Length: 143
Image (cartoon, rainbow, N blue to C red):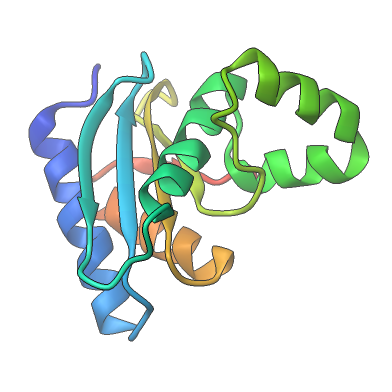
């Protein structure tokens, strides 16, 4: 199974809905397919200039290393030289904080990732997980 545009749009809309329901700060959301190609993107009014780059970096890091960005954050604390090298190897697009979540299908295959930035990293992850679940898929934050 691959991540369809319809599924990516559902994830995007539901992520935004969760953020508004919980009163979160304005978010930027980047959804990548399993190849790392941008599938869907949105930045709410009021997001700061680089939030989109941060969101994409959270998703790209998750795809690049095959682990949600919460797990990457642990790796950064335990093995900072590895994360520095991995960041360089994937072109600098790796943000090692929560909010980058792998998107898995029913068979547990990675079909994409979402990166969310704008609120606390924990809240970014909460919104991402709600979006993925709304599409009937499974989120893997690397917990």
